[in-house]
Length: 470
Image (cartoon, rainbow, N blue to C red; front, side, top):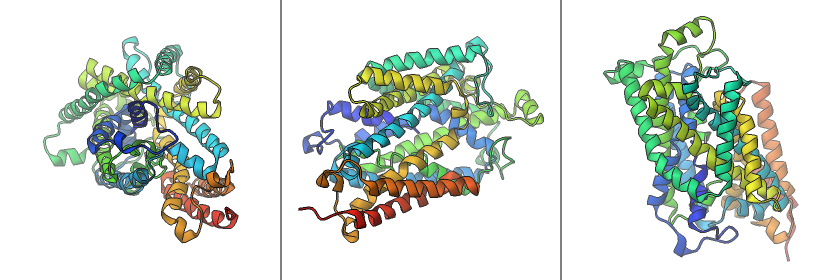
């Protein structure tokens, strides 16, 4: 799921240039560069958790397989016709584009929210790696319903992993980026191997046998909600909402020669968000059939969703290594990104110390299994919070003439805080979050309405607040 280090890799290629100016023609890259990046970066640590979690929701075979197929297609279309379309025309980073529209002070608030959410995601990946590292120590694995640390061994392992990841991230991105590129094929191979072995362990000999793993669906596990086709469809569409409709990947596709490079995201969606999720779900299907899991279910509890033991059961030591690498290659660049976001808030603080700060927050978050065990809910919330900000960019780009508003108003009017943006986001977020909580509506169901409302309100508020510029 996580392609957070793609942006960093491209910025490293550009040697840190063009952060506040359009990318020149001489630095543009072909679609092949993006294909490899997206294919590798979406088969990561999060996939080892998300796949099994789908199984805990009692989803049916049709709802999962077809829901993922179409939901991921919508994500690809969002990248292709929104993100990459705007990126090749503007060729600016998300942050500089937001600054032109929102003003510097409002972008600081966005960076703070982005940084904190990145830390929580990195914390979930530290949790993932810890489930693999803990196997040789016979560590008790966190349960699906656990929120607090379950013992001293868990705390020590998480702290050590968090410290190592934070220190590596703080040393700079060159080594991290190169290592991640080497590790990605290994992780993808591990997912394929896990899926094949799990199919054998489940006795699957035909497509019908494969389909019957989910069948017509079952009751969700304790503490989980029942997923239907629409839950899977909208969740998979907006799992990366911050990146496509939220416009974060403007920073990536500004280097693309053509907007058609947006189609390369299909490699990430169908290698990572389709093959890898289903392969990871198969691992959990094997575990559910074990006497241990059946005994837990008989007691009315949910069996643990611990990626380390699941992968180890399928492919042995290679599984442990793959889970550690998958968690590491996700957490490391995510902590680095969080550090850069915090640096925008504290510009006088060195990159080293803001990264250490981000790593410390992520490590503390990793101590609490809830961030990983509730990853479906967290990812939905993450997209819901950040996606409407992208609507401001999209609606201004496509509809500024029809609405009669001035593009990049904050920059041209020399204002540091565009209230039209804040009010549009605040109203759309507040209204639909209230609907979600008060009426128990699945959060991914209201992400699109919130995004649309934010864009429309921005145009309306801008129309009445903008003054003519000399």
